[in-house]
Length: 84
Image 1 (cartoon, rainbow, N blue to C red):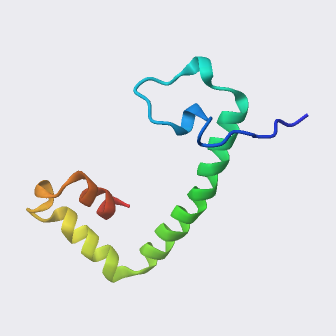
Image 2 (cartoon, one colour; image 1 turned 60 degrees about the vertical axis):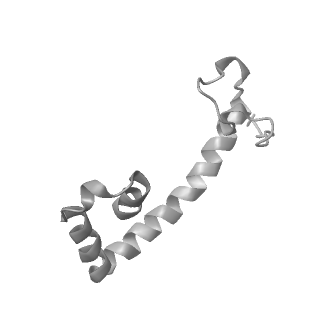
């Protein structure tokens, strides 16, 4: 018998901000919901990466940014965009 996820962001502790994972509040349907949410996002990221890899000018520009002397001065958010 399959477990049908019934959790919503309001009641799923895995979708809340926390400093320490509330293990005592996590149920199987919470985990299933999160896995389904993120597995749906993964194909989109893979498609984006494949398209990006096919666009040589973008690849070269991102590579040049990473190899530039300004790279250490970029914020973490800016670096994440380039490292996608």
